[in-house]
Amino acid sequence: MNINSYINNLPNNQVEYFGTYTGVRGEEFRQLIISLLKRANIKDKYIDVLTDESGMEKYAQAFTAASADSVNNYEFFEQLGDVTANKFIVWYIYRRFPELMNPEGVEIVARIRINYGARQTFFEIANRLNFWPYISASEEERNTKKKDLLEDSLESFIGVTEFLIDTRIRVGVGYSIAYDILGSVFDGIRISTKWEDLLDEKTRLKEIFDQNKEELGPKNLEYTETKEPGQGTISTVWRKFANGTRVEIGRGYAALKADAQQKAAAQGIETLRKQGFIWQKKKKVPKIVAQIE
Image (cartoon, rainbow, N blue to C red):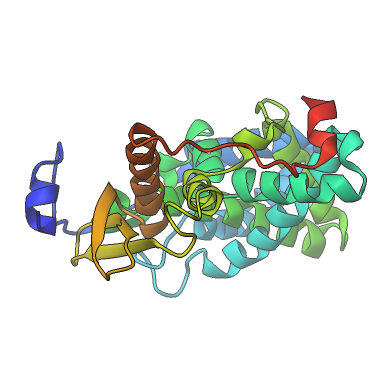
């Protein structure tokens, strides 16, 4: 099946998009920003400083993709926020689970950071905080890259907040406020420390091949992608054989390559399960996991 026929079988398929969507601005947008800042228990006088006319221009930039404005967009602030968010997740996890503050906990926190600092989690957070109506972007990007736009806007919001506080109030204070804002959100998220919950589908599939080296071979796993302009990505996962042939074991479609691969891997796991190859927890899982579970 080629990419066109595959996509045509998907519901609500639409390929061509025109124009640019301008996100909601004005007082409604300002109230959104204020509600987010209040999560850090900032005093009203400081909120007024951060949300004056020039401050709101920066926040508007944080919700503007390059496809809507090639100059005044979120790319600079998204980079700042990305660094802050990655630092936050590691420190937050250790504070939430102090029992992980040891050498064995490092591997667990590394996996949690991958899962909860990844696109899926930040996309869900931004979506829950109702960022979507406020993001300016091309119609095509809004229809094909929603996860990216939401994640980038959340990181950019964090970047702008830290930037404004450091430049208008005091250098170094911005991170504390960003931490409190993100912390208020993550406090309401259930975070599993079970080893099997920390592995994504792609990692699980690789481990199935590793655990069944004699039958499957550890290097006999392959992903290929097909993509056309204006469409998402089809990822196909293959099981390769010694004679050079291969057989498809899973396929996934998504706007982003990484998401498509995860969906393909999930199908691959199910295919192998039916053939008797089932993922098993590693024998050398960090001991601390059993204690937490």
